[in-house]
Image (cartoon, rainbow over all chains, first blue to last red; front, side, top):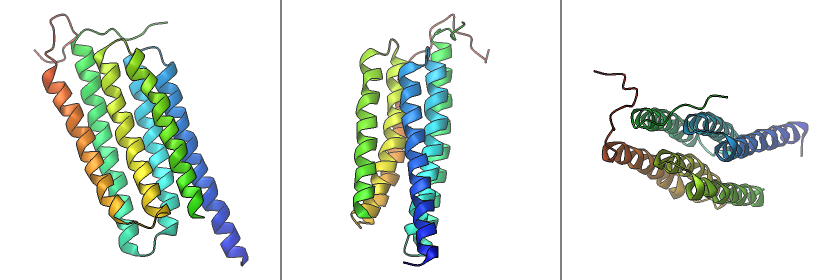
Length: 103
Length: 92
């Protein structure tokens, strides 16, 4: 194993673990935040960042440029889809009269 | 190396199972629907990790279907809930 392999393995491990950490933070936010808007905020942002970091890690292991492009496109699709979904849920919650949490 | 991906996927699955507590407890239906979001994003990541760990590229296509299904589930939920009067509507 050359130095380059070792460094790329360390980077891969760091990126994957950081991604998993953001997923953990998102789930924790879903369980701990006081209202539906806070939960949406925690879940959508943290999980998409976690997916992005995991995708970066997987891209390094991909065999061809086509795989890299496909992973990138999957991430972009997830970003668009979950942004839309989170806005839809928040607007429905606001219109059905759920008040935002005030300390 | 491949065991690492499988292990991470298992950890995410555990994460998903803990997130189910919110479906069980969550006071409003919007709280429950929020878990569709959780399942979409986490499920896609699990499938991508498994595609790498099991060397099965077909799972990436299944991940794409997961994204589509999660956004469709949320859209169906939004269409089903009729907005009651009294909400702060931003349209006349």
